[in-house]
Length: 257
Image 1 (cartoon, helix red, strand yellow):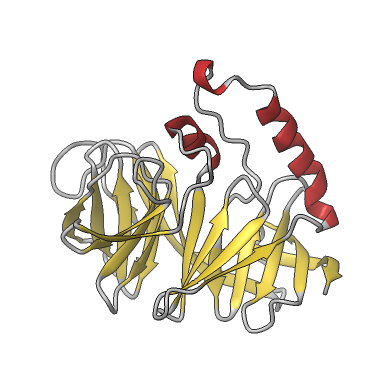
Image 2 (image 1 turned 90 degrees about the vertical axis):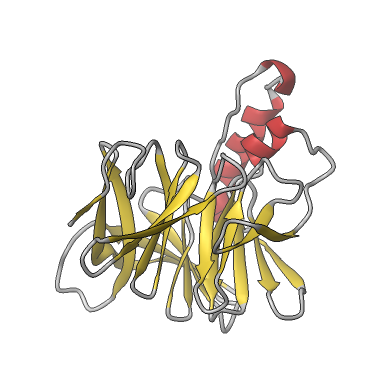
């Protein structure tokens, strides 16, 4: 099923970006038109658009129950802005580090977002080995630092080496990514990462003391240990919506407690 095409009309895109599926609704960022387009996942029909208050959006998560949208953007005074379904900023979440320049925010401030049980916003930093858990009810923020995880260290060293040799004021925005994405299936948080080929972090959100690093393949097999989730891919400005197997786990690479 194809959704959207290039243009500025209803349901069209100029520079499609991150997406989120909530219930039977697909939310897709349209950077060029500065909006979020909404579609039905059952038939691809266009529903409506939400106007964005800022242009650059890294990632979004949607709470359909409370009609709120969480966006990660370097152009807001806080790392995460909370919008209502009309596109108005309700509040912000988190704080920038001491370096609050736009270069820093754009290059190192990206965050992957996922919503867990409509209560916890999972915030995965793209260039740091840090996962944050924000309680949407009481406002508490907890943090899990994975710096000591051996499988991440080679990539972390490369990231720090790369940024240490850059003059921020005279360089374009550069993102050396550690965590490529974050999504939830059941009680499991899955985070594909760079540094180990075809590997993914698996965290049990009911027991954060156990972390598995799993090997995967892009294969549609009869293996019983598969991860089903909804995803969106970009091909020539047209969206292809999948409800299919994306990662098929081969075996655990290692486990740590």
